[in-house]
Structure formats: C-alpha cells, structure tokens
Length: 382
Image 1 (cartoon, helix red, strand yellow):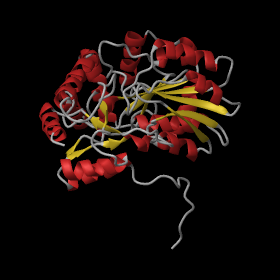
Image 2: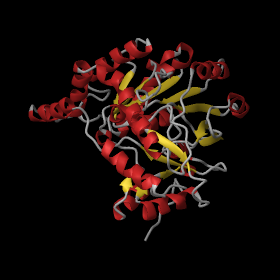
Image 3: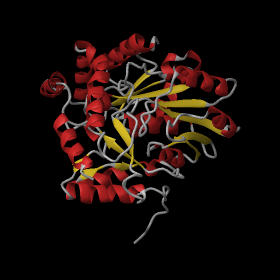
Image 4: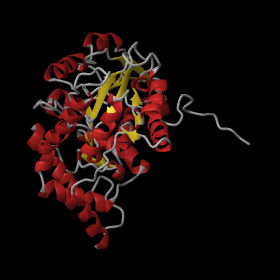
C-alpha cells in the first residue's frame, strides 16, 4: 500500500465531529457543535421547494445569482453604509469556510506569514499551510480575550501578508470595537498587508451593541475580504451558503480560486435566500433579540451551577470556567461531561496552539428553549 506524504500532519478528525459522535453514542444533549436544533423561516424553506419544482436546478452563475447579490448589496448599504458593486465586489460561495479558503489561497504565497488569534477557528491554519505559508498565532488573554495591538505590531514583519480577524469571535464571543479598527488601520497603513474578516456572526451581537464590520472603515475595506454566512443568519447551516465582499481587485483573485474550487453554489437555495431578504428584511434586525433571549435563558438556568462565566457579547456560544468542578484537562473534561452528565461541550484548548492556563469549555445555545432547560438541569446537577 502506498501512503502519501501528508500536507497536514497536525490535522485529524475535527473536535466537532468527535464530540457530536460521542454525544450520539451516550444519548447526551449536544451543545457542542454550532448548529441550531430548529429550522429557518418557513417562507425560506417553502421557497426552496418551489424553485426546485420550477426547474431552478442547474448551475448558478459563478459569482452567485444576481437577485441574491443585489439583496446583499442593499443590506450592506443599509447596515454598514457602504455601496458595493453587485457585479464586481460580491461573490456567493459554498459556505463561509469555502470563502475563507478561497481568500487565503488567492493571496497567500510560500513563506508568507499570516497572523491569527488564538483561540482560532480550526479552518484557518490548514488553509494557510496548504498554501505554503506560516500561521503566526497570537494568544488572546482571558478573561476578556481582547486583541493586544502592541503585540500585533511586534509580530508584523516584511513577510506578513494577511491578518485574519474574527468578530464576533468564536469561541469566546468577544467583539471588535471602533477603537480596535482604528488601531488596526494605524498598523497596516503604508504596508501591503491584507485583511480577512470572518464575520459570520455579524447579526448575533448583544446588549444593543453594534457590529463593527471591516466594511464600515474605508481604509480597512480597501485591503479586506469580508466573509459572511447565511447558515448562521437563517438557521440553515447544512445548506452551506455564504459570501465574500471585497474590493474589485481582490474579488477578481478570490473568484479565480472559487471557480475551480466549487465554481458555483446551490441555485434554488440562493433564489430562496434572495426572496427572504427582500420579503422579510426585518429578520436580521430581530436576530440579536432572538439569540439574546436564548443567551439570557441559558445563563440564568446555569447560574446555580458550579461553572463560572460572564455572559457572551456575541455569537451563539457561551464559554464557562469549570475549574471549581475538575482538574482534568479540558478535552478529558468534555469526555467526562458527556459520559457522566449527559451534555456535550467543546474544549477551548483545541482552538489554541499553546493553550493558556485556563479551564474553559464552550456551550452552544442555538437550541430550543426545551433543549436548553434539559441541558441546564443536567449541568446544575454536576
């Protein structure tokens, strides 16, 4: 048997698959993998079936169906005050992960360096390494997990090609503010450094706080890829539909990769998403309150437990400190939690190259109220 030389020696089965499989085997309540246990808007689901029945089952345009790109442009203008070209700055992709990979592959070369922040979403580093570059991982420090811009400045070299920013941040829920964008603008001014904004949780920001997108900052946008997710916004993670907004020159390069990676994305789903954006524009403005209810319910329910936490600022994830419960490393604790308590979580250390000396796990509260109540009862019994 011939064994190929692996390009990703550090990569195995993702922790999300491992924990979801364990949850199923032990009949545990799965608060690990980040997907809702409820469906998206009924009008959206019905529209997909209607478009399939009407024959919209062939390739979509490589850049995305025009109706959907037009709705994206209108949303961006309304929420972020930026006019973007429907034809030259918006590309619909097969999920946000594809957009992230295509952006990295489009601009990163051998021996380049890409700055990412730990805890970091697990797709970043493999995409960087597959394109011959090196991930420079900077650890965000507990408990607030904010970016130390002085540390970023110290790590910038003539090899720095790209900085990846994730806000709202998975798994910690931290969000960038206006001062962060200004500091970033100061650091990259006069350089060729590009930016990749992972903003898939853009509409899940709490306590009436705004989402400070790279799209809102003129100097930053001119060097940015900004990635969003319909799966997160419309509770349809299994559809794998996302998009990337970038200036024309960057979009040209992203599309060169996209057209040979997936070429295009599901036609009936794109058409249905265009309809829901047009017919129910209030959905995105109502989403923060929808998920804040779930955050507050979950946090209130687990307040009597031995976990310690501060309610998350964004995303549908809540990190909790289990140091009052166990001395186990977080991966082992999550296995114990499934086997003994019947609840699945994600260990935060898997998002880090050199995990800090903290004991944190991540729960997903994108679940029905009934699921959250049942999970909380088990959590409080520990």
